[in-house]
Length: 119
Image 1 (cartoon, rainbow, N blue to C red):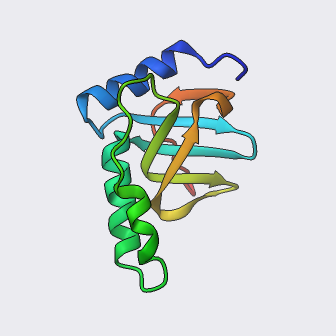
Image 2 (image 1 turned 60 degrees about the vertical axis):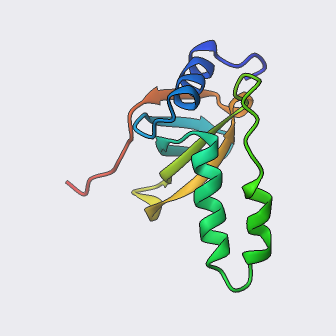
């Protein structure tokens, strides 16, 4: 979006201010449809840091995510956890992942977490 949708910025700001991880959202970005729950940036950073800390090869990168999130400006990104990239008849990864999406890259969105059914 050349001018990001004010509604999605308001949703992101509400997630950030309430420190809630219950808002489900599906977004369309160039090359991907991502669906899952939004998390405050600080919670998202902490979870990514924990995953990296537990990795033998990537633990040195965990410190990058330990820096505090900047809360003095409007949100510029959505932070998804328990999220999937929808492709064909499946979501990747099946168990959900951690994604950071620039709000300016979102071309469409809907409230809710989309899933597929074999029926």
